[in-house]
Length: 309
Image 1 (tube, rainbow, N blue to C red):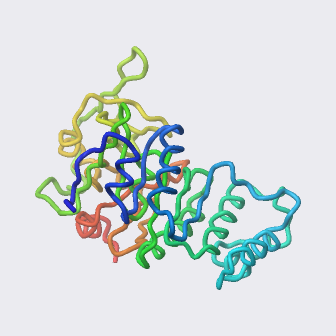
Image 2 (image 1 turned 45 degrees about the vertical axis):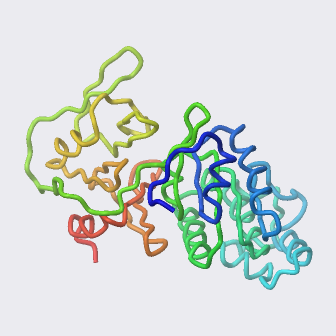
Image 3 (image 1 turned 180 degrees about the vertical axis):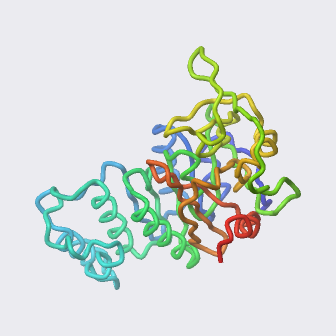
């Protein structure tokens, strides 16, 4: 299989053509539903587990009784107590599910998935309800399960989330599916240059207005579906500038090309995490605690930039 496969004319052909590979797809809900049916067909006969956005559990049940039911139903070697503890829900074991916060309900569903001891997991927008700590728990579980051979198919998420998960990220345009740009190998380019200062403004658009942002206002810049965006205070603004140009212009202001599709303000990086041998994540100190992918080929340069050990 080529390292960077060609695009596919439909999600059904993508799932069939990438059989046995974890796929994370930025797409609309209709395509996500078709993907679910395609997974059922492509992986028939294998142990599959599903997490849909409508899965909320039973309000009058407790997490412990809910998971015990599924453990018995599935004949699982994983106990309900073990699943609860793994996802940080031990203290909520006897709380009614109806009283759980959305993040806690999401973690409960991931706990349910583990009881199936699945070979294949299908999820709709798996990270949507999760804060930074819960996201770390889930991504670590996905990374560990992936290393053991589990295939993950996820849909309906933004590309930024898709790139955080083990496997290959894809995005949809006019019904076709395209592979996300992945840069696993370090390339020659500008290196973080410390405290040098020069005048610079980043141009962006908001409706009919042209905006000019001071680099210090910018959290990160991302390339998504052939358009580049500047993230400022939680809002994304389209910019006509090319990522390669911005990488050069902003290097002196402490920006780092952490991935082929992302440039991050190093001053905003609060945490670096490694989920698998090839999966790194940067958590920012912005209000949303945004997670950005760190390409494995750029990790050493990032290590030198941040002085992280």
